[in-house]
Image (tube, rainbow over all chains, first blue to last red):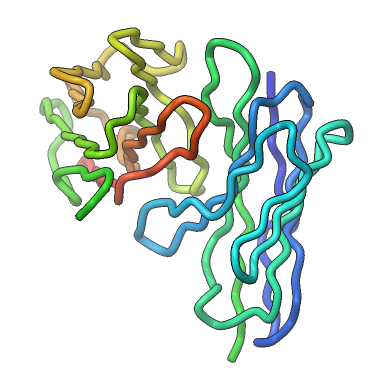
Length: 113
Length: 111
């Protein structure tokens, strides 16, 4: 059974800092991995999708990497802004017919102005 | 121009009632999902529905029943609501191999 862990559970940084959020998963037989952002009281917004054959994906100030063999992904946020404050969720889709996302518990990020 | 929409946004009801949450996606996706997010913010899959094939998470009580009138809609009906059903319910959809898109959520409170 796939388990997804995100560390740290909460992170507070001053504006302008670069930061890294971590995600680890127990079963490396994945189809893809997706990073989401969730603002309080809102739904999930997809940030980046990395297919199992890819090593990284970039979108603006965000860069997500994937190391399937070690069961890890990182989300790098450059030059953080107060508007980046949210909960960041990592989700893994396994190979096979089920292909349902398994979510981590998230990292709550606060960027202080 | 919302991609995945849910109604209602908030639902407050008493124990024992039956209620439904509606979900619609205008993305042309083949697969739709229902998730439950509990008070600790943990997201768990409840159902997925792909081309008329329903995949049920075995931990979901049979009081919960998804209904898909067509490919663009996946509604969630809940019978005999219990206090523990209080949570935020998210609908989502995706195309094969692609990103998953989520609706805004329905906050269900059972009193």
